[in-house]
Image (cartoon, rainbow, N blue to C red):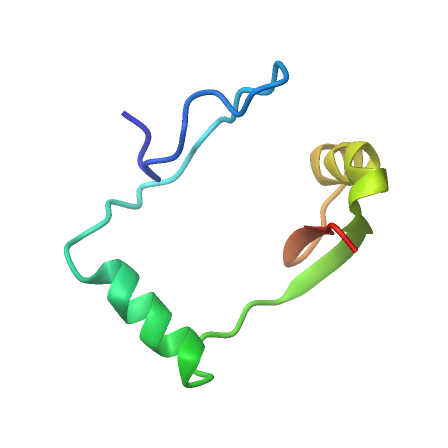
Length: 75
């Protein structure tokens, strides 16, 4: 079982690898949603890519250290 409870197959031949000691507890999602809604949840974005550059986003993520999250947008 994945510790992040994510899907085992993302389609198009993409299989995620989940790592980390995180175990979700009842109420975790509601707590995250409340923190996001009131501005207490801070997420550092290290890089942004348009969907047309999604492959490059994965290459950069896998091949070099990016501090923060990598965001792929559709617009």
